[in-house]
Each structure stands twice: as structure tokens, then as C-alpha cells.
Length: 367
Image 1 (spheres, rainbow, N blue to C red):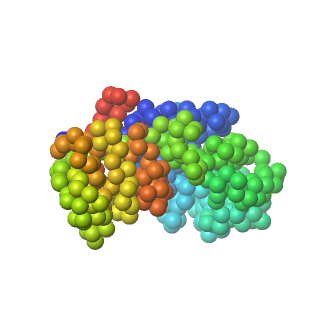
Image 2: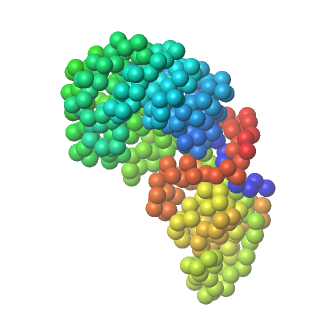
């Protein structure tokens, strides 16, 4: 009986990288591994993505763990460093750093480093989150080019705020501004995230930065992975631990939020918000058991959920339940929980066992 297992198909990850390369054949790939590779397992995914050109992480600790695991490919710190003392670690581990504030730039230029570091200079083209102002780019580039702390020519980068909405006017505004900046920049550049890789080919530049699409999830609203030939990498599973008869008018779960409209039966499944299944999943959220779809009945508990299976079902204790994955797109679950697939994947907790598969063959188990 499998209780709260996340099966990670490494073959699907590799397939999705091929989809990236098909859409952006002339670009290098900076594969996003931040947040434990979107909940999939950083080291295992890095090893599977051996055809990527570099890896992106958000925190220095993530990069340190990858180096400790023997990953030698370039690793980019997407938020850069948070204090000057980290620069020596970055240099010694051969990491790349993003610079996105004037304070970071000044600290970097003033540092006495044991070796040069490749720099990605981030400019804010309209998302208003991270990045120096467009009018500061020329001065920043002049300071960086030829500096002993800088390895090669800095890479200019920016980030779309609304690429998941293909026709949002901000996309073209941002790209037009970035294009203007590139006229004065002789080095490499990077702009496209997953959504832009699929829908904004002019933005691909020298480097693309796929994230969610590597894990087999559509990055574009009102679409699913299958629309782009992507394969879901994670299938979240558990087992039925009880089957109960419920009479018409009886309620189920905390808060009595679901009432039986007729005599029926429920299957109780060992999964809950303690495992990362969303507590705010609504009544009617789909669950697949024995290739049939059933629907959530009552509020999600810490350790279990209930689904209505009806009086004619042959569901029994021990049967496998699929919460999202190959046969049940995570996009549907996110919609029922009023969230995004990113949050669901990153929210899978440590008590869920990860089982790494290559195609149909299990290659590794990791708690």
C-alpha cells in the first residue's frame, strides 16, 4: 500500500528539455532548479538534465548542495549574493551571480576575490521586482567590463511579468525596451522564461530560462501540458484506507461543508495538507482511483481526504489514488484550489516519499 508517494519520472524531465530545445534551437538553456527543483528533488533533476547548459537557483545554499553532489555545470544565483562575505564562496565554487541592485554592484566591484566570476546584470524592464533601472545599464556595464572580478562579458537579462498572458500589452512593452538596451550591449542576453519560450519566439535571445515547463506543466493560462507536448514529471499518489457508507443528509469532514444528497459511499485517502495537498481544494476536486474519476467530498484534513464513490463502485481499501499527474493534470487541481501549479509542486512536504523513475523503470528511492 503506497501512502503519500510522489513518483518523479526523469524520462519526462528529459523529454521536456527536448521540447525546450525544439522551441528555442539557437539558444542555450539555463534550467531552473530553485525551490528543490519545483519540489521534484534538486540533485536528481540536475543529474537528469545533463543536456542543459547551466542551472539556475535562488539561494547560495542550493548551489552549495549541487556542488557537494558533484554537479559541475555552471550554476547561476538568480538573486545574487545577500552579503559581501558570500562572494568568496561564490568565487571558490565557480558560481555565476546576478547583480540586480546598485548596492550589489558596488559591493561586487569593491571585493578582493580569489578568482573572476561570471556576472548576469539584471535590468527591470517593467515588472518592478528586481533589476537596475534601464537608465543605469550603460554606467553599470562600463564599470563591469574589463574589471578583474568579472569573467568575460556580463550577460544582460530581464524578466517578463505577464508572459503567461500571451496578449498582455506589457509583454511587448518590456521586450521593446530590452531590445533598445541590447543595441548598446555587445555581450550575451537572456529574457525568455517558460511562457515566453512557447509563445514569444523573438525573445529567446542567447539564453532561455525554462522552469515550470521542464516539470511538465503548462506556463500559459487556460492551457494544459498536453497542448505543448509536455509530459508531467510528478504523479502524486496515495491509497484508500477506508470505505464508508453514508446516509442521505449526513455531513462529512471538518465544518460539515459537504452533505450527502442520497445514500452513498465514501473512500478515505491517506493524503492531506500535511503532505502538501491543498487545504482549500473545493468540493468536487477530481481524484482518480482505478482509472475512474471521483470527486472530493468535504474539507481537506491534515492527513486525509474523502471522495464520493457511489454505491456501485468497486473501490476498496488498498486501492491506489492519483491526486495529480499523468492521468490528472495538475492544472485542474490548481484551478479547483484557486492557486497555481507552481505552489502545489513546491508545497509537497518532506514526509511524501519521492520515487525516481526513468520511463517505467524505477531507478532510485529518496525519502
